[in-house]
Amino acid sequence: MFVLVASFLWGTLSPVGKILAALKTDMLLVALVRAVCVFLGGGLFLLWRDPSLFRISFKQFILVGFSSIFGVVGIYVGYFMALQDLTVATAVVVLYTYPLLTLIGSALIMKEPPSPTLILAAFLGLIGVGVTVWGSGTSLLIRESVRGFLWIFISVLGMVAYSLFGRWVAKNQFIAQESLFVYAHFLGFFWIALFYGVFHSVSLTGWVQALRSLSPAQWGWILYVGFGVSLFGYSSYFLALRTIEASTASTIATIEIVIAITLTSLFMKQLPTAGELLGSLLITIAVVLATGKISSKFSIFQQ
Figure: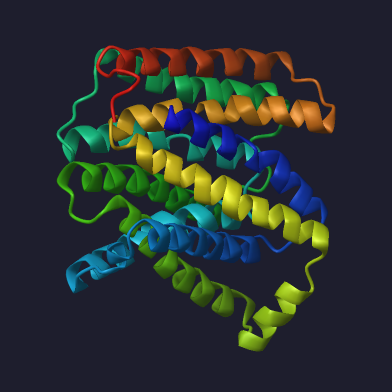
């Protein structure tokens, strides 16, 4: 299932992020390179599959450009900016309110009301995230900041917008999903570059110097984040939205936390706490409930 592939790849972001942070990597620069990797990788795929997918109308271009502000920029920049003022624990708990908000948006905007089982799964997933974070022994609010909450809420809106808009496009065929995916990251790159330039007060020369200052190890992990986590992760999530509701996909995606805990335990040689294990169990139950809803509606071979 595509959404599980996406969740696994996203789950690797936390341990990789720890490595990049230890290497003192500028996370805004990482966000910039992520957008470039997705645009280049997706663009090459379009050239190989069907170059006509590059042709979109002005109306489509404007709508994609607007959506990229909330989607690509919100997801790639919002979370990392929030971490400057919030603890990781606080940011994670707030971020994973997005499945519930997506569930509400799916019912109101997409006219796809969730089943009682999916509602239960969404709440279980959120509770599981909370139990996991609190059970890790991490203080939830060390540097509480209104600015930090604003940034993490932007990231939440980005995930909700990405899920709902991707589902809407899949249902209404306003624009080919492949075209949307590539152009959203192409335009997202310019928004992030603009923000990066303003935030760091750097010129084009400054960007080049920043990129040249990266070590081979930093480049290796950044390219993995760009092509692995972002290109293959978010494209897999988009493909999942062709056959399942945005609310279901976002609920299943909470399994990312379980994967992150497992990989962190393996790579960092840190045993999970009892709270993390209990939270992971609740999240797993939520995902099983959500995937059970899918299996009752779709064949595994259905496109």
